[in-house]
Image (cartoon, rainbow, N blue to C red; front, side, top):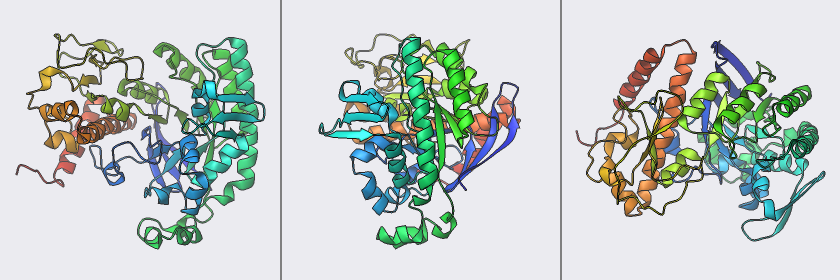
Amino acid sequence: MGLRFEVSATSPTGGRRAALHIPHGTVQTPVFMPVGTAATVKTVQQDTLEHIGASGAGAEIILANTYHLYLRPGHQLIRRMGGLHRFMSWPRPLLTDSGGFQVFSLAKLRKITPAGVEFRSHLDGSKHFFSPEHSIDVQIALGADIIMAFDECVETPATWERTRDSMGLTHAWAARSLAYFAAHKHEVPWSIESATKAGAPHLASEMWDTQSFENRTQSLFGIVQGGMYADLRRESAERLVEMDFDGYAIGGLAVGEPRDVTREMIARTLEILPRDKPRYVMGVGYPDEIEEYARMGVDTMDCVLPTRAARHGLLFRAPEPGEESSTDQPRTLKKADDPGCPTHAGPIGMSGMSEETETASRTAVRMNIKRLEYAEDQRPIDPTCSCLVCRRYTRAYLRHLFMAKEPLGLTLNSIHNLSFYLDTMSRVRAELAGLSREQAAAWLKDSRDEFDQTVRDPWA
């Protein structure tokens, strides 16, 4: 058995409150997955990830990257270590992508054929080949709870004809991925024997009940493509539903298109996908975006943004009175000229937002900790947040760490941003379960207060 998906409540807009039961635990949805590209969520250690967020529940599932782990340290090494969970000491659920997007990003280093993709490593230029079968084999060796079919992500913009041909390739590869998975899913490295081979029996006894994984399998999701064309998105969703995957991802978005186009492609795709299976939008987004998509009916999302933005000094917090935008679209906050913020700083790589910019939406403010105005600011990042950073550190100190290039600053920024994302999803889940926005906010505050009582006040 792979997964069991239980929907407990739905909303008029299509959102649903559900639970995703997979071998390494139950994931409450809608959920945001922190990205752990190379078997690590950058700058944040695993025991911290297990306790961040208002209730102290931590991240219930994280994502790792097939392409990067295949290149370094290698999937066979990880298989010999008992799988990715044991290798990185993460006993909770994991999802791996197929490597298709990373290969797509190597436009000058790859060659695509119906058989698969030949590419050169970005690390050393060595030549490699990914077929659908090989992608699935690597993901089985890694042993994540949820794995993805191999796909091609078309560039943006692309013509309808180019997108149609790419989509056809994705469908052919999806069928091959599904066939190979059906024949080899029993090879997943979850067993007492695997733990023994890993040479780490304490992991098997202390962190995993290896007996419980016997006869449990991974789950395979298909990836809907179709670019920015509604008719192709519909066709792709229909074809993949016919193949009967365990769940479905919506890929090829957040690659430079306007946000309203992203929203439309998600909405058109959700109309086709089964209501009794999990839905996953890949690679999104800002806090207001993940909230919007969750209310539309998306169950799972991931993005590097919380930690990438943190490493560039961009933090997220709840808006104060008067900061909220009148619409869901972020608005730029007017700030005086700030010589403390480098004028040469470029975009952080997400939605083209400059590092100097501060914006506000109805649910989140994007705050640039490098600004000179924070140099003597004794407030926490977010007075309403109870993450370990906001409980202890000031904006002034965090700005100092960043300007001094101290690594601790990147860690603290990342912890706060991840907590903000997880708290956003906690609030949305509470509202989808039937609470009003005010009741959900009160519930989240109660969770924070309860969690605070278990944490020592450093100034007491």
